[in-house]
Amino acid sequence: MSYQVVFYKDARGEKPVAKFLRSLSPEARAKCGSYLRLLEEKGLQLAASHMKKLEKDVYELRPELGGTEYRLVFTWAHEKFYMLHGTKKKADKLSKGDFVTIRRRLEEVQNDEG
Image 1 (cartoon, rainbow, N blue to C red):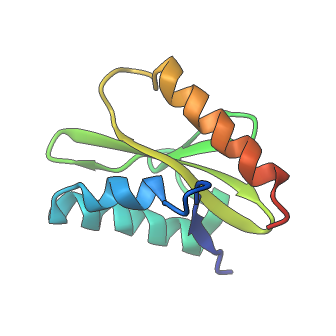
Image 2: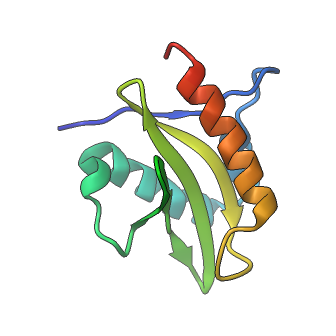
């Protein structure tokens, strides 16, 4: 089965996760892209080494390259995976600020008609 992965778009029409990916080195962008393709192919059946559930309806992809870990946070809504947030891992857990952003974007996606 193939799944659709889309990027969350804010009120200004910007896609923060796409912007984050463009800010990465070509190698890191390719690594993150390979994880997005795995999500398209396998959905939530990805191995725990690739994906982790953070809380209800919120998951993260966990690519790593050269000792740097990246986090691509997403949800499943309207029959699609929505990429909500992207960051380089700086601590064991995402920050409270990251979660404020993620939850706001999640609410917007869930309240949208798809």
